Amino acid sequence: MADYAPDAVVHSGTAPNVRSAASGDKLLDPGDHRILRINNGGGSSVTLTINVAGTTNYGVNKPAKTVAIPNGTSRYVLVLAEYGDPTDAGKVPLSWSATTSVTFEYFRS
Image (tube, rainbow, N blue to C red; front, side, top):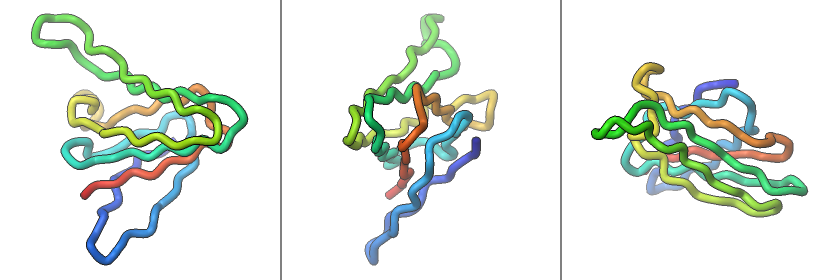
């Protein structure tokens, strides 16, 4: 469980900062040009759920964002500012269905 800031992608190149998925992971500074790359090296599909806090303009709870990552594959996800929890300093909570052999990288351009 940790908070992660996005790594800046620069013209000279950026080495990926690979992190192991864990319960309680949160992303800092969501918004334009923020990308999460999820790698599933496990033997079965994994689902990432982002429980978006708050309600829409018409009072309905914002829907959760879910992403399925089949075994042995990767997925890229845009990390929108709307995913940030205003009651938790704008952090984006990540909820994994499993964490074994799951890693991620978080970038900004």
